[in-house]
Length: 340
Ligand code: KG4
Image (cartoon, rainbow, N blue to C red; front, side):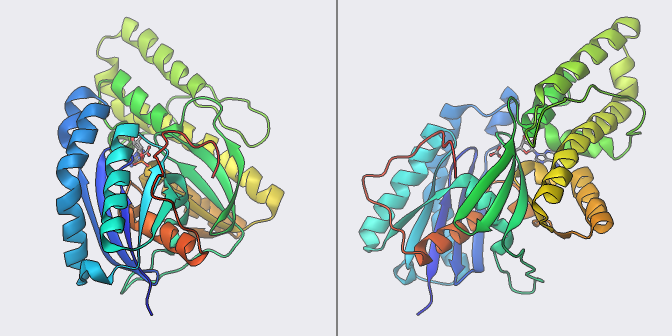
């Protein structure tokens, strides 16, 4: 009999539900929250309230688009963390209640594991290329910058990670500093396409091993803009494309430098990326370029699977379910998870 998994994601500001049948995607519904744009960042209390409003219609839509009845579900997978506690509580409480009312098992998923496994979601009409184990995943989002060695769907090793800010945070904070808006990544990405990446240079960190650091480059940009604006108040407006292109190139150089090192050290040639920043067109282009040069098999997630979505939670949940893992009904969400 087929395993039909409902995935529920509510870790930050996207309410999402997806249905997967034996690894094949039947539906993936996402309700994004625009309310935070006015505040320049996610407001946790507003996020929880929007999740409460969205969760029932989103799940209902996912089941209906999948062409199934709720009674056909085999199990429910939900994001336990990391994320905003209030947001996670909405998804967790809903998942528990729904599983209890249907009399089916509950499976918990680490949100980051979802990003790392996003390439395994199979879709009708798609190529459905999948990396072989072990592979490396460059996991880059608003809260993480890690190089993960994926030994199997349930066995992960963190080879390196940021010791301060995440790369998405660097995009977001610098965009805010330059008055370009929130979230910063997509805006910088767009402006960078029209600019010269070699025009300005920013200080690069010197960190041992495979770890990252992004706080220094943020400060480097801050001082650079401050000094130039003191000489010419219109400097920012006149040069924003070149600043964005040069800053984005510097971030990508930092990311690629350690990824190349990790690939050399492990001898692994199957390389994937995941997380919100993996939507960055400059990063995607450079990974492909680097891959061609080094004989990697590169796997880029589709754009819809780069940001938070329940399809990746459902596929991770499917692997957990198949491994026989079940989650007790007194489970609580957690805002931080130190490891996979
Ligand atoms: O994975 P995600 O949706 O949420 C978590 O952090 O969990 O990632 C959000 C991050 C934000 O920092 C956003 O600026 C960044 O992903 N992002 C991008 C792009 N699209 C989203 N960064 C660079 N380029 C993009 N095109």
